[in-house]
Each structure stands twice: as structure tokens, then as C-alpha cells.
Amino acid sequence: MASRLIDTNILVYAHDRGEPAKQARAIQLLAHLQVAAQGCLSTQCLAEFFRAVIRPARPLLTVTEAVQQTQRLARAWPVFPVTPFIVLEATRGVRDHQLAYWDAQIWAAARLNQIPVIFTEVFNAGSVLEGVRFVNPFADNFSLSAWG
Picture 1 (cartoon, rainbow, N blue to C red):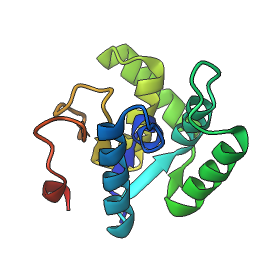
Picture 2: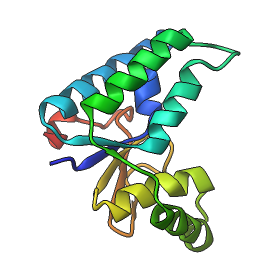
Picture 3: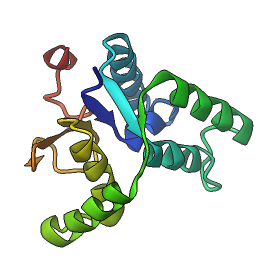
Picture 4: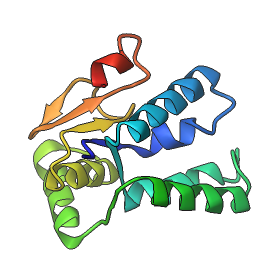
């Protein structure tokens, strides 16, 4: 069962040769989650991934490679759609918890799909917001074995 939502930054780092330590950790985490069938994505993460890896200032993949990788991700992981309920929950996250909207939408996707953990480096690592825990897999104290 999918129990960890993978934020966009993890997906992007898996392709970022300019950040070799983060790239290695991202690849290791993704492989572990895939083997354990514990990872999932939101449609927002897929869209953000595509845009991030082809950004003009520093593209990590060609457009063709990015299309292929986005297709692979969509086939490899359960993907939760962004629904009107998620949008409304995200607006509540902005209002009640002062989250930036796009971060709130990731949180809302996890919360409404009963995913208790988001792997990300964006949120306040270790914090829990209405039952959703934010874990930074790039933190020095992160242990992959603790999540297996």
C-alpha cells in the first residue's frame, strides 16, 4: 500500500548530476519505495517534475527525455489526481496553516488520500500537520532503514 507521497524535488534530484549526493539519495529512496510498493505521487508532482527538468536556465533532460520519464513515473507509481476537494483543502491549508498554495496542495493530496508521510526537502522536516508528517530524506540524520 502506498503510504509515502514523493514530492517533486525528490523526483528532480534523481536526474540532477549537479547535485551528486542528493541525486544518489533520491535514486536510493525511489528504488526503495518502488520495491516496497510504498510510494505515490500527485498529478501536481508529475506536472512540476516535467517543468523543472526542462527549465530553460538549467535543463536536466531534453523535452523528449522528460516526456519519457514523466510517462515512466505515471506508470510506476499510484498517482492521485488533483480534485476540487484537494484544491479546497489546500486553500484551507493556506488560510489555517499559512502554507504557500502549491505546498498546501501537496499536503492536501496526502491528507485527503490518507498518506501519512511526505518525503520532501521543502517543508519543515519532522513537523506533523493534521496527521501528515514531513520527512527530509536529504537531512544528515535521515536513515532509509527506518522507513522500510
